[in-house]
Image (cartoon, rainbow, N blue to C red):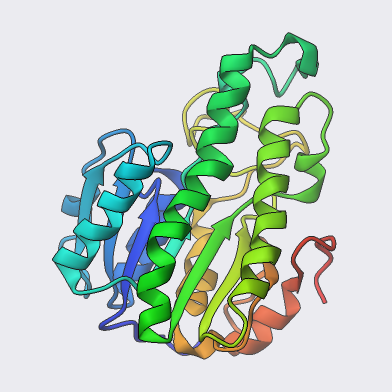
Length: 274
């Protein structure tokens, strides 16, 4: 893939300190973008980003709070001069329900209401609140990107995964609605998924530990998100909206549009590569 230049592009990555968010934050900055990494847990990503072409700033925030979502956007505008790209990546998973969820799926009637609420409020309500705060800036500029990180269709429907799967299915449906709402504005909305359980803190144990695996017996390296998120954040993806992209299937040896076509389909309509 020909290197993409994102100089002058201002991004927000929620959950930008760890896992998929960290990989995307560093990839966007390496391509020249300025990135605000918003996170609920303090991680020193700005130090790791020193020497990259773009600037990376981090801030602590809870996206369940609409006022804090507005503050993330305001701080990004103050730091960089605008908001062009929002990556809704922050999320919580099944570990809140059970530490053994990937071996013993917990039935929905055993989930505590407060746990259900926390997962829903983070994964779908928080994403809505971030998009609601960022979209007016993009609309005013006549260009922008909303990139929602969801999950595989199988995970949405997997036995015992109803809090997490339901929240991501809701975000997927919202992505289709938002893409339609944004038609003709220059702002697009797409879904990006790793394409399998990723080696992140959403699973029991620590990333990199031997023997970790997802429900399908495999783990995806968060690095797969790098090339597709950079392309989605660029003007090269103009006109691509309401789509879902499977990062694991992205072939970086191909021209970006060809790689995108081969790993994408319409959002909400399965995930077989075209």
